[in-house]
Image 1 (cartoon, helix red, strand yellow):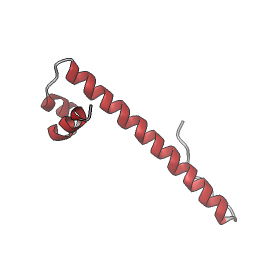
Image 2 (cartoon, one colour):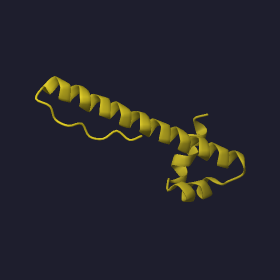
Image 3 (cartoon, one colour):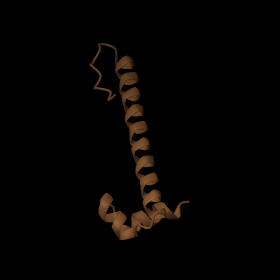
Image 4 (cartoon, helix red, strand yellow):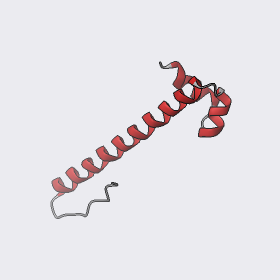
Length: 72
């Protein structure tokens, strides 16, 4: 479920809390997506895919793929 933009209220504190809540939800969604991508990269590497092959499939550079794999 994607949060939508909050509507403006007459209270700046309410607007600030809504904006922070939206930012937190977006940050969590980005973290989940990055974790999923990194797990898929590790899975592909464990099953014999080359760095350049993974890079081509993900749109990342082969050095970024190597950096992700080296973190383990």
